[in-house]
Image: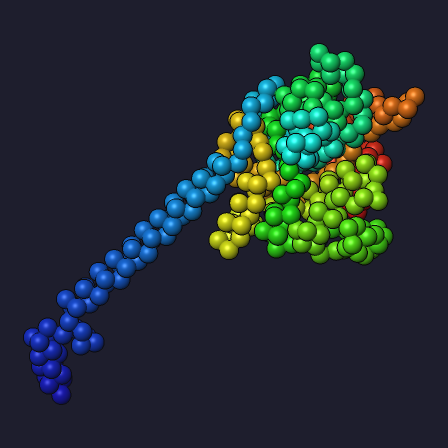
Length: 338
């Protein structure tokens, strides 16, 4: 029997068959086909990734850039500070930042060293400040007097905080961003109505049109509308960063195109910096981010900074300790539900 089996084995070998009856040449050919197919998939994925990268760069590169003076060079040990303002419609249809309009939203966004969450510091627009070459005026009028460069210079002189970049949000285009994100949520302490839309107390899920109604409620004071703009900006940034919308093929195109319509940045803002900005700023709305409003008081009918508290705030920005400042001065914390 053993001799018979060995003879069969030898016969199989003579026929060119392996243990499973598959010719070795065919097995080698199948292995080559598998490896070539795998290599093709890898190449295609690499090409797709390169194409996506090129597309993102192309779209981000179309975000309007403007020259802004007095910006500080990036210092990794000090983090990044971005001056964020709004753009409103002026009398001839252009945004107020290039005309006689007032700047309602003035916010210093600070990302701590190592791209860790930092904080957002809002400056009340009616605060009186010393403006280089112009004397004293409300800070909301500085851009109209000398453009974004003068506002950067003014805040730098006032706070001694190096400002690395300038960015401007056009709230007329925020609706597109909210829709691109699939809607967002805002919280209100009590029910209110704006342009026929009823917002109930608590969390409201809103689309783009409702977002504009929320931010422009005519029953609010100017200070109230600024708080609403801050709240909406916070909600948009939170979802943009936390939901990773720029990494999803389903949402990336919509979000990027909405970003182009909504945002204007300084000419030194590189594409890669803009691309990483969304994630970094999204972190500011998480548990690690802190939103505060610069402390002010009214003296002889004018809004002025509280010197001691403000000095501590500017130092906190430079040292990356805005959260510690908020704990020391809890009344400066910007409410999430204005």
